[in-house]
Length: 227
Image: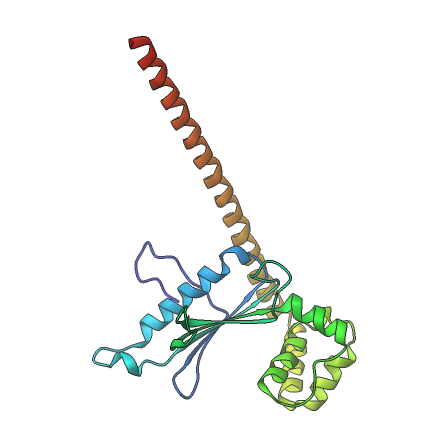
């Protein structure tokens, strides 16, 4: 997503797609930096939504923008950690949906793997929930203990089997594998720099507080001497 100004922050998505009905889908894979994830997805949504409407079009005709983030961990604290977390704009009193323009979906892959390994399967059928579980099983295949689950899914769902075959082919392509590794290295470097920046900021804020404390003490001492 290109910058609007020179000082603007660059946003990078893994997939940006538009459905036949005009709805925009933003998909991101996140293995690091969960602390800032919710703010990053809100920003990505806002920028994509702001770009969609053309001059002269009514605001009500703008299709929704949906963000989907696959994460290696939960955005929630405590025991109530859901595999699929969906956030929308709603009334805080009666919980009615104010607008379908915004949807943020967070998929906790770690919680999903834990559930599959515990139950030993992902269910049958082609409901939205079951199909999501099947695709998630393929994405998290390396952490699924019973590999027969993946084999059965590929045999039951032709499109998933084709996708897995293509992934195997790409993984054997040296150039593609190197490009993927470069991307992963860039993600790790970015998150390391962000962590260092936050630590530097924290230290500077503490130093500023200490300087302010010493300044006040010095003013109080001077005031006492004057009296």
